[in-house]
Image 1 (tube, rainbow, N blue to C red):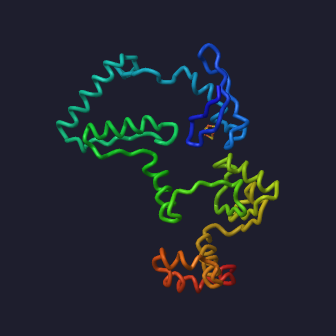
Image 2: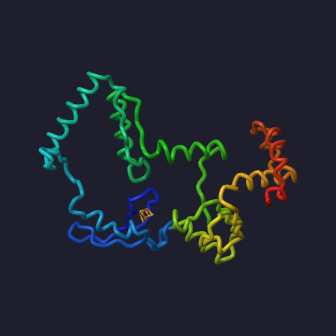
Length: 257
Ligand code: SF4
């Protein structure tokens, strides 16, 4: 069966082998553009995850220190009566709902949680997105005007700044290694560590804690040599003159020290 791994937001393509309704083997889908046939250790253990004997598949209730299976009706009645009590005693706003990741693997759950939140009358919905993904979306919107998505195989130049995708995003690392091997991309790695990709590109092995100085020196050169989009700055930037004055002192020669 052609499917995808739902153990993280990457959603790698998998070939799933099923016998008598039971998952027996998974392989990375060779033709999938993201993972190109590979899986991370978590994805490779998907069979164990799906068939784990202690996986919770029905409601459980702790009674006298032990977990006991209960019916769905009993579970729903218990939850409903407790939620009603909380609302009566403390008001609907006293309830905060925490949802796991609301991305691809949980999109249906997210819509049900939103509806439940509205029906109960609380505005308090939090998820891993509240302190991770949404913040990234907002930063992208403020910086680029939209949410951008990396596509290393389409890039002409890649700057990895304090970023080691071989450890954190192996599928992008694969794409970058391939692009470098084929001579399609210029790679610059800014990192005190000699990461696998640092060995394949221009490596700026800066001292830990000096990233800001390097960034200011880069801004100094970009502004003093007029290498920026002047129309964009005029239309959209705030405080550009102050920035210009501030970065003047950070010459490459000074920062090099
Ligand atoms: S990175 Fe690993 S866990 Fe995430 S979707 Fe791919 S195989 Fe699954």
